[in-house]
Amino acid sequence: MAGRVLRRLARSLLLLLASALVSYAVATAALSPRAYFEDRTPRPPTVAVDHELAALGLDDRTPVAERFTHWAWRAAHGDLGRTLDGESVNAEFGRRIGVSARLLLVGTVVGTGLGVLAGVWAAVRKDRVPDRAMTLLSFLILSLPTFVLALLLKDGALCFNNSVGHTVIRYTGESTPGATGGLLSRLGDRAVHLTLPTATVALGLVAAYSRYQRAATLDVLAAGHLLTAQAKGLTPGRALLRHGLRVSLVPLTAFLSFGFLTLFTGSVFAEQIFGWPGMGSWFLEAAQRGDVNSVVAVTLFAAVTVLLAGLLSDLLLFALDPRVRG
Image 1 (cartoon, rainbow, N blue to C red):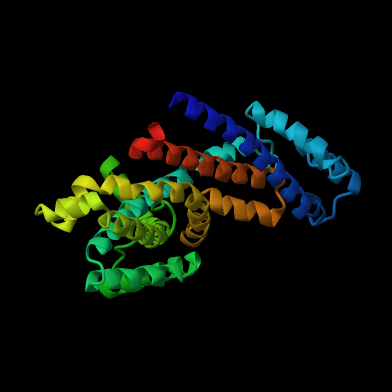
Image 2 (tube, helix red, strand yellow):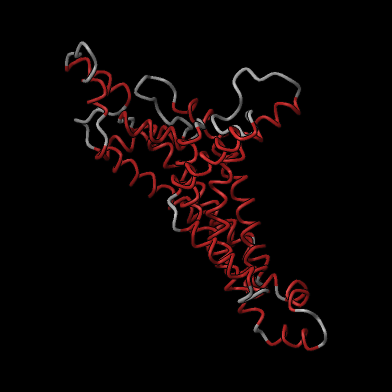
């Protein structure tokens, strides 16, 4: 097991380096930090702009490979560079990552857990009303773009607040500005603000995972050992819980790693619509300004999260499937 993890970590490091190279090359080709400085009023002289870009390591007269080498060397030593305003990318990264991590962690846990439960529940009740209702609801959610789903949830919260006459569901920002009270009060305020962004991220996972888990569970329900257990008097649900649930979870572990990047994309829209100052909103702001160093920092965060999800997928597969351990 330890050797498997070490080999996976080595491959992940190579993939991370390749991701950094590609993202830096694409960001350099697509973005124009020079335009950010030249569009100021009054327009600065070209020499001053060249000096600013050189100080940031973004001199467009230097070959991309050389710029990337200097950036990668600094990044390997913990320095992600400077923003176009001269601020530390590391400091901004530190402020933003906690916001996104909370949203992604809660959304992943809630979405995955509910998706697995919904898939198993639908499989046990195959072709009955609950199964058909779950199928209809899942495809309805999957057909909606993430930003449309977020806007619908936001409008629903607004209508609910108006109907009760005061603000019950808060949906703007990570917390209420100027909120006072003890620790529990502040945690409750943050939990209320987290509700709709988490629902936006989690609903897509519930819809997708429930479909995969339903199909995997139906395959397990048709297995010989479960049919034998049912012949001995166990209901399909009890037979599944005792003898087949772990097996039915195996296919989902592979989907976990592949679906994590889509989850990150969904969180970008959630952060933007609900006013969360996370990595997603930072990425959009940086791309609009042409801030290469900030854009590359966010893409590195996305790459690391996807690679960690892949490692987690391998560990779960190892724990669930004895054939892998053999």
